[in-house]
Image 1 (spheres, helix red, strand yellow):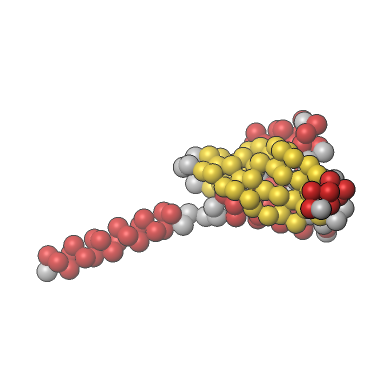
Image 2: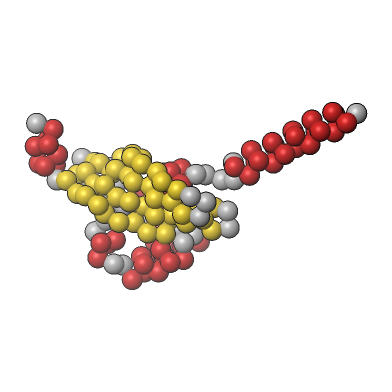
Length: 150
């Protein structure tokens, strides 16, 4: 009887740990989901920064929304925010995280937008990862890209 109770407690503890670890998307998934949602909205003719703020808040912090509203120059020209980069493909290059903060280095490359490397900074808010900042690290024009390849 005692071994059944101990086994049951171990199973419950394991399930609780697994459920706790599976608490929503990880930082890389959050970035992919946010960018995918953002592009779908833009392609449908909606400006999510103005018309879909409530939905946007599921992906970004209030601080990031304030940065967008004040549109720092590096954000305004960022391919992460620019509607002209509809064709950009996102690739996750590196993820570093702890329990409260994460950095996801992404590559955005596209026929129209060229190639860009960005750091997306996330924080955990109420158990969910949210984008808190975006910084452009490197930008390659199409000519530079082909020079590096050749």
